[in-house]
Length: 414
Length: 146
Image (cartoon, rainbow over all chains, first blue to last red):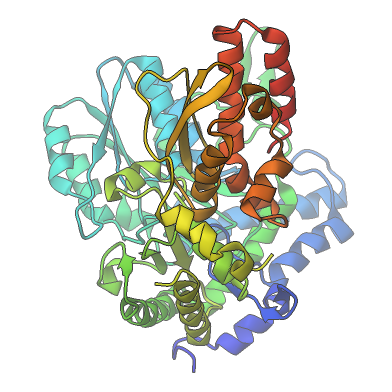
């Protein structure tokens, strides 16, 4: 039994880690993909190939190794531009991850453009990485941070956005394209449209969306967009900030150092062109090169197929889960409105206890606040359990998961 | 250790029916802490009279291990000499719970209660008894708890 959209058996064979056993003899069921995904052999080999055959620093040396490394590093930039459909490759900035990308914007754009009594808008379902940088900025500038609320279906209440926009004080609206807890897919086009009407900048956190949905930035027309490689088969330590060229040109550098300069004199420096102005120091060359292999892998499957597979798996899991007595499921019921992330609570079993119990059956899920404590307050819970899927997960694994949840219920005498 | 060994009847009972749950009005010691990794919260209140724990209560939110641990710790120290409480160790807590082989992630849950208690004792010794030598000793001992 497999979903009809992709050949899971072939895919699973590309992921050596999925063959390992945990707790001695339990096949690994990896349902913690919203935290980080596993890596196919193609990505692992691309990274070792760089270290084995052409390891060298990029951009300035003239020897052959450096040329090969520079070409491979820059080829990833082109692949990303195509993957998220942006016109200008120099608008793609390599960073360590989504967190760094948002911090870069809050620092380099925010400090120049946010003033006292301005309003920064975010949402109640943000990851801490899309809250804390704005809190720091708001405190420094005496600005206000406001939240778009979440309704009982786990969707944003856009009337809140309208009310903030009407004050005329909003400078930027920052939101996640897919909630890392509820799985809710944000109506991003609508938010961008409403913000444009007021000339307000928009930052979108794509950490959970880019790995699972086709994202078209020309269609979306936001100002800033951030995502991470490691949540989409790529290595850790690589992320992308995309921003419109005219904004990047006006922004001050985030880090000073090598590679980001044109000329350095004792007291004055001129900046390098985009994107290098924002890539100070030796970057994470090996992992950027590895990321290209991840993009190739996803392109080969096709993002439409990825989405279809996850919708089918999520529907299957939601149907099975909702039959368990005592379960509370969070987020939209309609799989068209959500990604493959399912948060839940089971009776009075605390998520940490639940995760401990089902881990014994080889199942890796997340438990806790998922770096979204503002949302936990809104849901009035201290924590949830979260299962999140990717291309290599199967309905059989969901069945193992359901059996394990029932075992947890028995242990807790529910 | 297996889940069946961890989630024994007694742990579940203390989780669902915590003893000494609540707050003390104007306590001699009030200490709160949370585990930033999982968000578990715990607050302990104590009254000290004639060098003994005259009253102790706790409130909190968290997993069965952290909440049962806190409740069982309150029972362990109620009526005991202040000196005895000062000397409590990690092993005493784990013995009391009957949980010895918890993994590194879950042992934090079991020891949150002791961490809160020791921090409370530290503040009490410094602020009320002005005994910085004993306080520093407690601080040193509890720094190895996590």
